[in-house]
Image 1 (cartoon, rainbow, N blue to C red):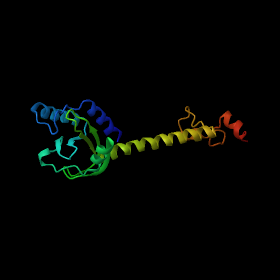
Image 2: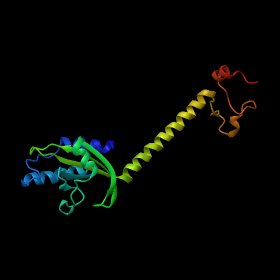
Image 3: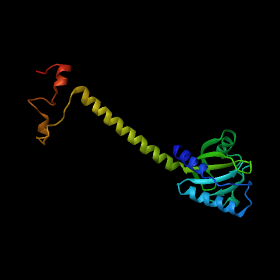
Image 4: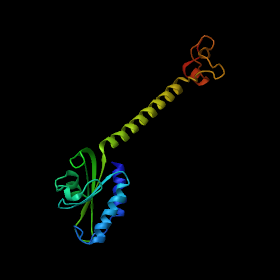
Length: 186
């Protein structure tokens, strides 16, 4: 979600100026299309929608062929609260998407909704990578904690063989700190 929120912040700061909604001036229509194309370079699907649900521009589909979007949950929330999100299936591109929408004021006095979406598979992949990294970091922390708690110093580097684990009949070398903590072994 953070990635979509960051893209939305950038998009809002660079949003095209619209003197009417929907735009009627050629330069505003072209500016809207240019903005959608530039924002789509982020990898997100970009859609600009009126408060009534009319699609003005979309980075992956022809807006003329798209149905009214007024009932979409992320758009209802964005209109009411300033932003909204949802996870649902896109009928237009036939994929599950994570949507994030924001309300954007215009010079016309009517807001438009800027919607940003990423495939759920992309979001899930990033989340899985994060979980794997977190799991590995936890495992490393646990190993270091066990090593510290028991004072295990590991294999003598000079030995280079499994026999190096053995020192005077013991399976581990205990540090002086461990000896103080647990007592000297006989």
